[in-house]
Amino acid sequence: MNAETLAWFKSSHSGGEGGECVEVAVAPGTVHVRDSKDPDGPALHFTSAEWAAFVGFAAGF
Image (cartoon, rainbow, N blue to C red; front, side, top):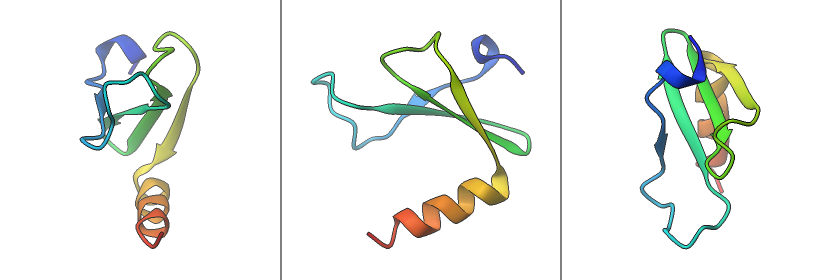
């Protein structure tokens, strides 16, 4: 899948002030992450298991 065909969304905790925000798009077996201010820039790609481990770790903060 390419970035244009993915359904990107920002966290409900992201404000509208133009701060540092990321967008996430989910595809079968993969989670894509990009800078919302640079949608044509690079994106990171994680397996579903990697993303779940990251979210579980981040939730502990």
